[in-house]
Length: 123
Image (cartoon, rainbow, N blue to C red):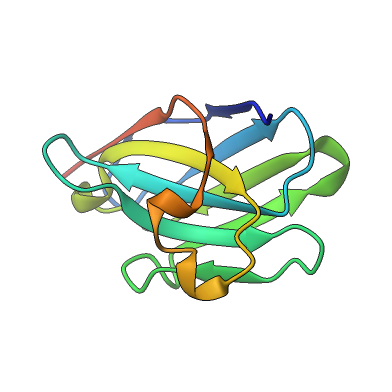
């Protein structure tokens, strides 16, 4: 079992920045950020592999969002810069042993989820 708690969401104007945190109860092999807008499918944002530090991010956020980790604190971060109104969503942290990197985009590859944190970007 892994408990995940997200924090750091809030309201910001377009062009602004936020840093989300995901505190885990114990280390995970792989941790990801997803986001979801009501009525739409949950969208993969980024993934980090704990041991190697390897990161992946979606094309929609590449160059603006950065996933990182503090291994000592079992905490994953999502630094979000140049925010756009279309980034508005509930952001979720997810973790599991996703050994095939081709599956990191699939929400069903992750067993453990946090409750989410709301990010609202106004124009």
